[in-house]
Image (tube, rainbow over the protein chains, first blue to last red):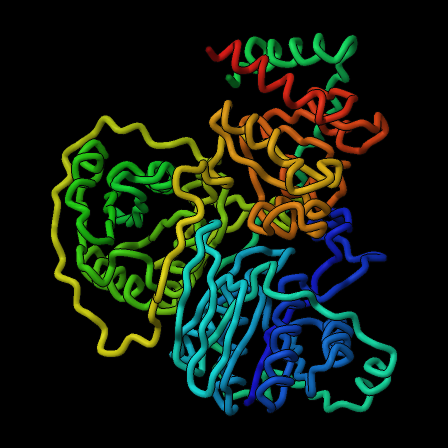
Length: 255
Length: 324
């Protein structure tokens, strides 16, 4: 079974955001595999271990993304593909077309990705990709059972559970609770260095430059207004509780 | 040239969801004076909804009713919505950033080769250009985005754009016959409603949230009681979810859900950056924590330093008294 995981490298979620010259500063930032993509990598590895085949991890992004792909190889993925090209930009439409251009020319049985990325958070690329490849998808899954030509998945729909069966090939996006992603082992990290790592640019893909023009543009970036610390209530607990309820009702008028 | 904006309505248990009225308001914010509002309603046995829809100031309501559309099915809904789009010919399409909207919008965007701006929390009109504002890094920053092409697709985050008032009521209703796609590769085998009767976390006006300080699954009971009295929902921090005190579907933070209720009551939550990202835009934040140094107090409007197992039940009692 040929299993692809579409991945993104993101800031660690404990990072603060600093804006410099209209962009998010990357100075000294710790990068991780997008946490939702980690579930996808883990699920791909488990599926391969059960059914055989190979796990390919693929990302579109800057050079530094190779670290995230190496981590996935160290977790147990077999091969990595990085498509890195300054002409690509960050529009979801463009990225999904680049991925579709590459994956459309490969033999693909299963594609896994994260439900959304914790940086941009748009949650578009995986589903767009499924459409572009004309294959079904199930979004936000918490369970996946594979057989030869079909897969059954549990989809989390705002807390409700939908049990869905699809024919393969198909795209699935991983929600929290799908599995417990493993940490790369030391031998895994050593092995990862020798695993195939393909680096591509747009020139290696069959895609028209016109397809890449972004359909959205960012015009401004700002930080949310700084929230000021309010007041710590004083007195006996019962009095504090009473005061809090009064404040919510009378000052904040939210009751 | 006037534009047409199509809002994709969502309904549950025979009523339109709040987010649909917010999407209609978003359409108004993205419109000029002579623009047209169309609404798409997809489902089964949904005639009853036309009554609530008749209160909306739309030009046209498209109804597409079929037993295959009883519940959300990605391929069937995308096909049905595509039929509506072909009839409505909209310049812009607006959905809620909900379980359905998050799934359906990118499908439609790809089908139409359209740009999409997801999870929009505000809309501004600047020099005749419509600017969409959305959080990134779960609210640690905000970006303004514009479209470079048409048609376009937007999803709006529940609870952020004020709901459209419903005092219009002149919409023409058009029924569209569902044309079943030749092959459906997806089968919805079963839907387990775990949330029926409960307030949806992302739409809740009041969220009572627990962290590691809640100590166990049982420890969430007093929080649920407080939420029930307030008509709110229960949430949790990553710490509480990782410790298996509650389901991941309750997790609030940069991983998990982002919520913006009127009141957020954080119980036994220290206030890690990744959690704060998911709730800091709440209108009023109340923190209850034993540790006076907990970072959550730095962003709380009101803080009580104390044991949540003592404070929360007292709060429940006090609210009961006040709310009758």
